[in-house]
Image (cartoon, rainbow, N blue to C red):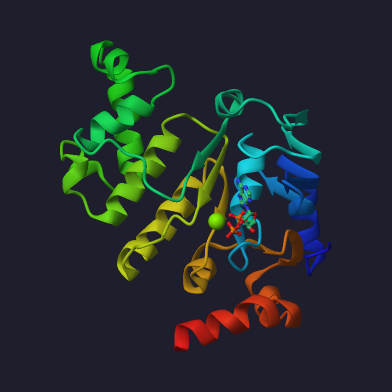
Length: 266
Ligand code: ADP
Ligand code: MG
């Protein structure tokens, strides 16, 4: 689908390297087609936001990319290489990092230790704590803490952080693995308005050096971060385009935005 409005935009997209491409992807769960042939392109340092009603297949799409949902047909191509149905650890190692809906952090450890555990090559709590704390590792962890806005909370136990701050720790744990592509599933779920806004700023900063795919519901947040939006509905791509194009698309209003507006007015 063509989503650009000017020649300048066209040139920009032509010159943008595609880092991740999903081609005609189908995922079937015991006869139920959760994805019915979805295409997606993610460029270098681009933020792609995925929206759509519950059950649209958004999480399944991210699962399929990282090898957690079996792909029935179609391809996932990463830097030109077919990674369809590869082992999820292998995909993570290749550079696709995924944050799940619920924070998966170590509450009894400090923020610093959580990031340390996530660093490449640190496979267990034991090996991380025992391995030498080099200056390079420390600097790397501090860089991550800075990116997630928690530099002053490095020695705080994760248990005493707010829900939003825990989500940032988990984003930090993804970044610590040095991914090229970061996939975030509803990163602002349960956050306050302030935390949601800060999350948007964190994601924009991360996108300076990563490609980011974000699943999100909150339209204010989508407007804050979005460059290109993909709308999924019943396992298919319903629309793709800029915030303005999506907000004025009659089919998107009918199946998704209209309902969201009614929900938020209720
Ligand atoms: P979204 O994230 O857009 O809300 P999901 O990708 O979680 O939607 O789910 C899409 C559809 O696939 C839903 O109908 C859901 O019930 C179904 N589904 C997701 N995961 C599984 C699974 N592991 N087994 C069976 N059905 C599933
Ligand atoms: Mg989901």
